Length: 185
Image (tube, rainbow, N blue to C red; front, side):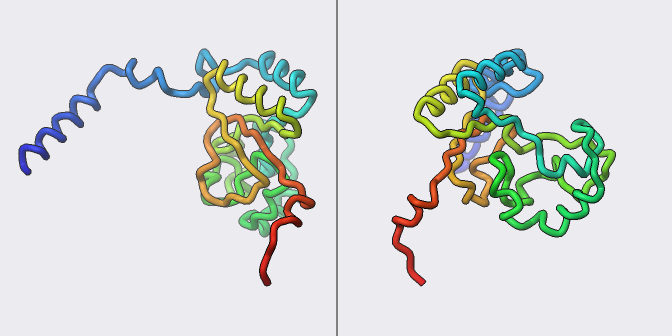
């Protein structure tokens, strides 16, 4: 048993000190990486989607001076008491329904001088209304090696659909479809 533990420890050490190149090949691009799409690439995707690409601007940007320059103390004060309620975030595609997973990258309680960052939010969202939108999203993510996450109707409150600078495919479930699902009182 002891020799197995030593072998596993040695293997773990060998893997951890191996060449860095072996680990970066599978990583997804983030802003600042050479492979991250430039503004022209995002604009081209938006044209392909016929205007269905939504750039993320966190709701709490009004509580910070930078980088959006829309500081509004009145609106910020109104956001604070409802910030932890899921309903606050349901209507905006990139918002995270659980404040815990937002990682305070842009919330109404941090200093107004702190930069509002995308953080755990998606960089962009595609408002999917056709199969072509799904295909374009997958193709764009593949070409640019960026993480793609499929988000449906905003019901998830856990962290499995978040990630810094991902591209969301936002699938909306219509209320007429939901009415077909039997419910119990």
